[in-house]
Length: 153
Image (cartoon, rainbow, N blue to C red):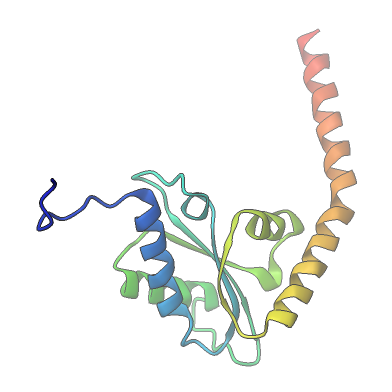
């Protein structure tokens, strides 16, 4: 029978849940943040020792107070201080390109939402922009394949 006084090793699952809880606790009190996600390797559960933390937020521009280096830098500084970690990236979804917003929605985990209906509306609009963009991505991929084939000949 295993001893109960030993500390159990942290598994990626428990580490991920702990990170999500800490991020939620750090982001929820900020009224300008309407939606917040963790995405990337941390959300997928395949983070390694050198993985950073990717956070995406949708903010109310009226509530946000950008500092001298911009809102993203201020939020990164806040998260670094609260989480005691340095490798944090913040994406502002208000200005994110369709491909990135889609990746956040596909792989991310929603941590904070003020109004689920508004969050769903924003996500729907972002997905619409992404699917409008997909034909262009396919054309670019085909052009790249053609160019690579031409170079090999």
